[in-house]
Image (tube, rainbow, N blue to C red; front, side, top):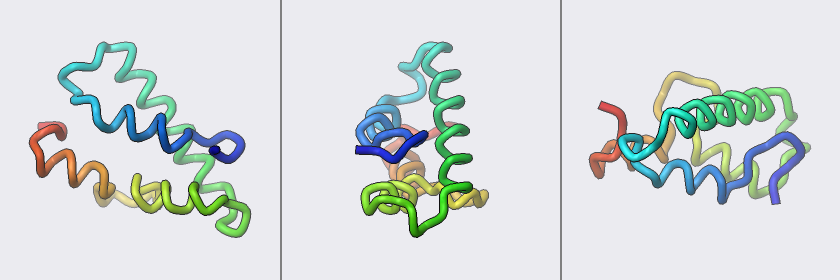
Amino acid sequence: MSDTGRQSLTDKAGSAMKPDSQKSTTEHIGDSVKGTTDSMASTFQPQGEKSTSQKAGDAMSGNSNESAPSMTQKVKNAVGMGEK
């Protein structure tokens, strides 16, 4: 279960596994909005208030708000599913 205002790990994984080339414009916009909202929620929610699953999800998705690619993006790039 995700914390209030956060995207579930299942939703994140589903979005990450579908190649960008197979997503509609609506899906791209939705992913962008959800990602931005989740990143903002991650930033403002203190670490001590996050569930274990959200801490793990933040680590995997790169929600540290740095410009470095997330682990998920690195994997997508490695298998040729990342943005070109």
